[in-house]
Length: 291
Image 1 (cartoon, rainbow, N blue to C red):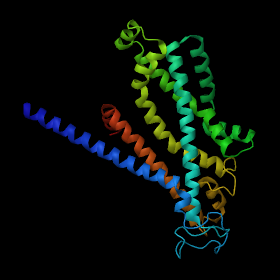
Image 2: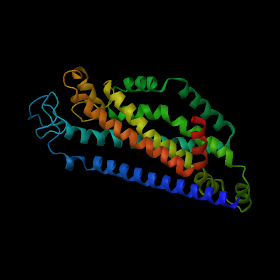
Image 3: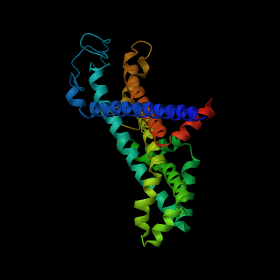
Image 4: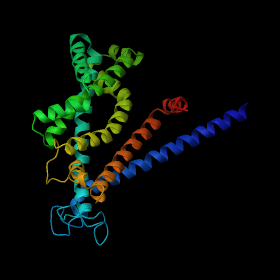
């Protein structure tokens, strides 16, 4: 009996060590991606807007990803476009995470009319298909990258408000909250010291997974002409500019598509790794349910 318990403990330690190693590896890869995007202009082999090369040249001969129809180096444009797409998605996720979490915590902690009003408004936002709603708002605002970010922020914050509210409702009646009240802590002190640290895990995992989603949705709006406008390099509008040449010159559209795939995959894997590390029991249960 004791031997089986010892083996079980060892297996748990090995799994936890593997999960931690996987998480650290993913964090390193994401940081490398962020550094690449941040220093994109310094890493570009050519001017991303210079129309000085042979149009639609295939990959090779000094051009890692070939050239586009205007004779611009695709690899240089992808690096700069990655910076535009990635940092726009990060800014968007930061805004909706802070806004939604703040509203959700206040609603869950205070309750009353404000809680009902905010939740009913979030129900209205969630009643419409998200991307269709974002398309309508972006079209009303005449497109542009900032307006695309704003339109996605309008439809995306309710998810964080609901997560934060449900987590707040789950912890606000715990014994340590009652003890904090008896100790004379104000509502703000209770929220900052006790509620936020205990609800941060699910919010952080959701935000990490949402970075890839927001990158794809921003790229989708740009692909439809409602996001970043040419000649600004952005992965979505780069794919849009080459969509008619997929069968003849596939590298024009596949190269930025692969860049989106890599970025989204890294952030999704990082989100899964964070979930496994922060809540290993829930991750194990989800794997069993999947099997």
